[in-house]
Length: 123
Image 1 (tube, helix red, strand yellow):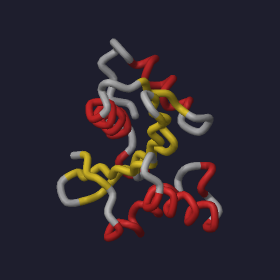
Image 2: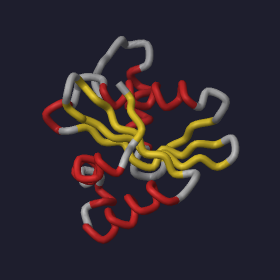
Image 3: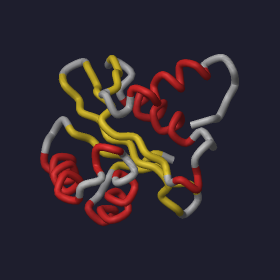
């Protein structure tokens, strides 16, 4: 289930974001979190499975375009289709907008495209 980020989830969100290659540095990670908390176009969502938060997806909305900035799933929950579900859920929220990846999420988008029609839950 997709839920909107709240300050109470800061530590878990930072932990999940730290799996992204561009968020390994603590200062960079803190800057990203501040942007999600303060910038109107930056939106961060968490994925809750049962009682655990296992994924995070962050987007930047600019007019009719949505750039997927971050997408990360807890390693113990990968290959369950959670990444794909998060992406689809955010697309459903902004169905009138065009989605595109950044350099760090492009390979995930490609993987989703490759698996379209294969009925795969690998994400």
